[in-house]
Image (cartoon, rainbow, N blue to C red; front, side, top):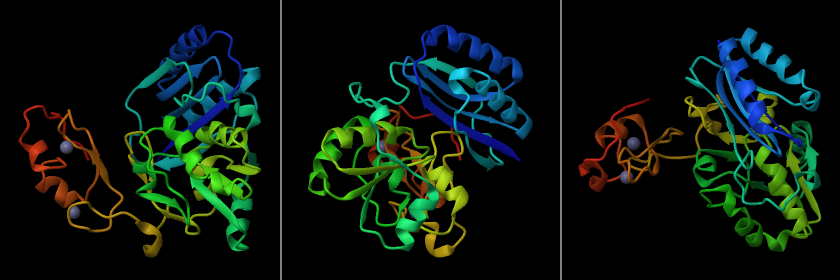
Amino acid sequence: MYKVISFYKYVDIENPESFAKEHLDWCVKQGLKGKVYLAKEGISGSIFGNKEKTDLYKSKLKSYKIFEDILFKETDTNQIAFPKMHVRVKDEIVNSGLENVDPQNGGKRLSPEELLKFYNEEKDFIIVDSRNWYESKIGKFKNAIAPNITHFREWPKVVESLKDYKEKTIVTYCTGGIRCEKASAYMIKEGFKDVYKLDGGIINFINKYPHTYWQGSMFVFDDRKILDPNTKEELKYIAQCEFCGKPTSYYINCHNIDCDKIIIICHECKVDNDYCCSDECRRTENKRDKYYG
Ligand SMILES: [Zn+2]
Ligand SMILES: [Zn+2]
C-alpha cells in the first residue's frame, strides 16, 4: 500500500528558484515521486510513496519555519500515482488569473463536521463546486452547483452567474481546498456576505464521511485518474458513458492529439472506438502512440 499526500500553503517565499532547486535535489536523493509547485505566493504539491517516505517528506517540509503548520491530506492507493519527481517554479501555485485577489481575505473555513451538519440539519445554503466541468461531471456534493468551465480562470464568470445569491450562505469546495482560497476571496470581493470554503477540500471530507453527501467519484490530476470513495451502489456513479449510457466514472483524453477532448467512457466503448471521441478522430493519423488504462 502506498500513500499520496497533498498540501499547499499561501505564504511569501522570497526566492522560489533557489528553494526549488534545493528541494528537488533532496526529493530525488530520497527517491520520492510527485509534483511540487513553488511561487512567490506559496507552495502546492502531491508526493507519492510508502508511509516511511511520505512521513519523511512531511517532517522535511515542516522543518521549515514557514511550513510548520502546513496541512497534509492523505489517500491510500495501490497504484503508482506519479512516475517521476518534478519541482517547478510558476507565477501562481494554481493558475487563476486572479492575481489581485488576496487569499488572506478568503471565506471562513468550514470543517467536514460542519458541512455534514449543514446537510443533516437541512440548512439553507448554496454549495458551489469551484472545479472544472470534467471534474464535477463524475462526482460532486449533493445539490452542488457545478459550473460549466474548463479552467479556473473562468471563475469570475461563474460568480457573475451567482449574483442573486449574495445574501445567502455559500460554501465553495474543490479537491484539496487550494482553489477555494482565491475562489472564496473573489466572491467576498464581489459583495457576497456569508462565504465558507470547505477546509481540506473533498479529500478531507470523504476520508471522514464516506457514503454520505459525496456522490460519484473524485477526479485526480495524477496517474490514478479517479478515486472511488463510495461503495454504496446508489452513490457510486453520477455519470454515464457518452456512447452506451452505462454508469461509469472512467474517462480518457481522445487519442487524436489535436482533439484531446476528455470523454466519459466505459472500457468496452473505449476499445470499440479505438480511444477516440468520434469517427473523424479515429480516422486521423496524428494519434497518441501510448495506450493506457
Ligand atoms: Zn459505453
Ligand atoms: Zn476527438
